[in-house]
Amino acid sequence: MGLLVGLVGPNVMGQFQTSRARTAEVQISQLRAALDIFVLDTGRYPNETEGFGALVSDTTRIPGWRGPYLKGAKVPLDPWGNPFRYEIANGDVRIMSLGGDGQTGGSGNNADIVR
Image 1 (cartoon, one colour):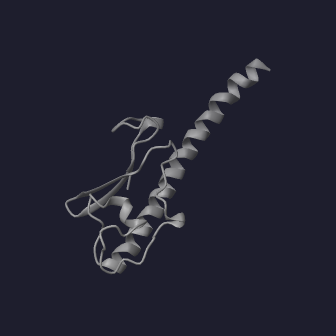
Image 2: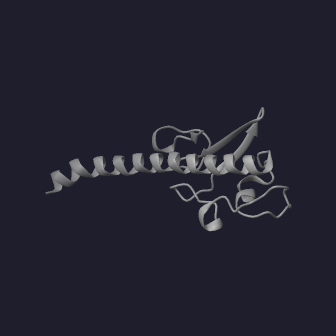
Image 3: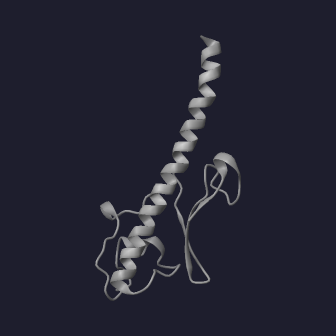
């Protein structure tokens, strides 16, 4: 029995971590879709100060805002319980989860997921 647990346990944990990474990718796709609708309504992406908050409330009175753009008017956390990052670099929007360790960089289960 102990041998069976020793063989199956690591595989189950590996699948669990892979599922978290896949879930993060799906969540990033959903955030991207909400941002795209925001752009259609307002003509621009939220700036970095507004971030994902602009998808759930119009605190700065953005012309054309018709949100909330996220279900439940709440920005989700990544599968590891950390906030997603929102960055604009050279006019491109990046959405990022820092993975299992919550730190920039990393590999395997701790790898960043960026789209």
